[in-house]
Image (cartoon, rainbow, N blue to C red; front, top):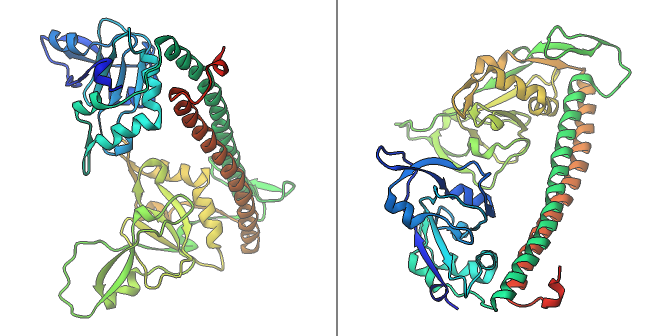
Length: 426
């Protein structure tokens, strides 16, 4: 039956501002709904103000369902949350819609699960309008058709799904913890090996750097500037008068990921042919980003691509090791280890959520340097470990994806009557 025959619904216009002479309220915002299936009072809700009329229209009751109404992505439309607890000052915020079931016909808990099912969610996704930002018309909510078994059956289905999804969620959480622990273990092992080597019995000596500690006795400590050159990149926006221009691929910060390179979207630019060699990447260059989010600062990727005459952005440093002292893959691993990341963070210029490093600071980093032959052994050993770890991580991620797929299919099957009621007995 269409929702308009079994529920009331409204689109909120309560913003996040606090205005004098309005009443203080707690706002249930977009992110609260997007990130929580159930709204309870222990969620840290935003404080704001609203008029008495807004509080009357958009207060939230137990058994209400709130859905996302606007989004930058069509598949984020109509994400639901069930109101499990409420208070007199709990109000629905902007970019959300309230659906209040008529209790004699529709249970809110069951409606919440209906809205999570693909047949119902798809109706709302398809009804959303927009190009770069999508919005759900209020009328589309009312037209959305939901299955409507008797109230007692609705309650039984909702309770069954709570039990079953809780078990699946617990399995997913355990596997996600496993992913985090595996990644933490991998990073710790990498950091240990690139600063202590592969031989646990190697005699050690003080590195002279308090944050590094001891290193193998036959290793050296050198600044990057004595074992590598750094090539800065090309700044766009220049106007050229020369006629002899070359069209070349152009690598941007977005292409340089943590430990790998995304070459799916390489742009091309035109520059004077005489400048190509100045900004051209060479086989074995170690790419590091000048700035960005804290987790993206530095990085390290060895350029081994067959893309010819590829240039790089000014926000990417191309570090060119002197191969008689420094092996590119060893340097790349060292830069993405805890040691490298901690250095980049400590010397970066930081704002609220961004950081940058300049060329001078990059060149002055101290590197623990074993003999080149040992660097190659370390790089090969860690490549094998990373490959094994990646296989295990991929297996766990696949398992998580299958559990989430099963969860979604279970919800759809239950609310559309494909699971016999006797199977839902507590």
